[in-house]
Length: 207
Image (cartoon, rainbow, N blue to C red):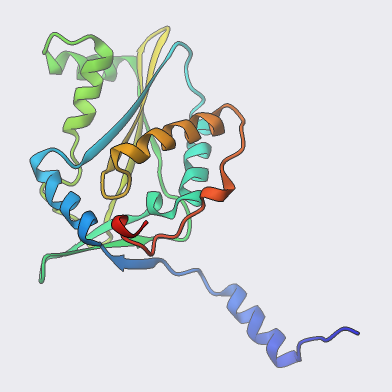
């Protein structure tokens, strides 16, 4: 036998289906907070980099990043600071938001020259990304600051660099290795690790 919902239940279900999803939020945990405090000292930023010999397909990389953000909600979170009590919160939108910022060969050359530190171009860009500390002063707007930023640089006709810059409260250096491997699988057409789906509801020390 089969049971069917009443019309009232069906109407409620339709109403709920039309309601926009709401972001999830939680206060940062103890380890999260320590990383938030570490960022102004320059130790709370994680940068992942790839050096490629062919131009990356921006749409493919961005799609892979969106899949990562779906699999790991913390990566699509925004960090909010409540100045009234100096507390931080993660706000997690229901959909991925990261956008890749492309730099053409001229703008890339300008950035490399501005470093003037004797490094080769790739390491000069790495240093530039490390210095792009979006969260250093915590002048965070009311909408929050993204924990993940992405950029692609055109160094020359056969050298291209992809950089991911993350707040370490969302992805520490140990997790970064796994994240980079998963990104490479997705970019090359491999399946993401469905078993790695996580919630954003737990602080780092509880996970």
